[in-house]
Amino acid sequence: MVARPEDHPKAAIWPIRLPDPLPTIPIPLRPPDPDARLDLQAVVQRAYDTAGYRHYIYEGTPKPPLSEADQTWAAELARQA
Image (cartoon, rainbow, N blue to C red; front, side, top):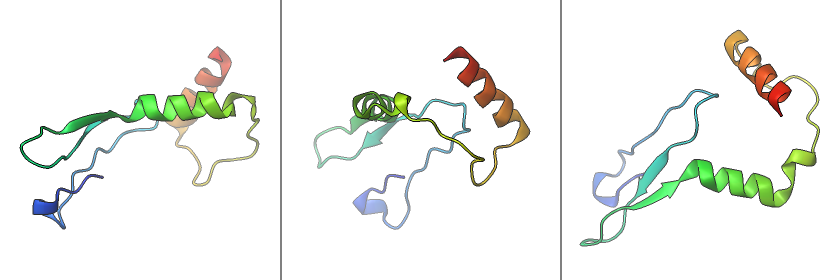
């Protein structure tokens, strides 16, 4: 969610489904500068890689549970890894 001061309390949101990559979003800067672009997927991937999360084993059922379609997607993603 990004809120521009002049539009507050309205804000922009980017809803995504679990298998979708995170979007690149605009970050408002002061005029006359154009919006900066923030690639959220790249930020999360860098944090994941840097912190070594691939070495963690997650057990149990996610809360809330995944939909059937998302369970199938997650199982295939785990098989590929």
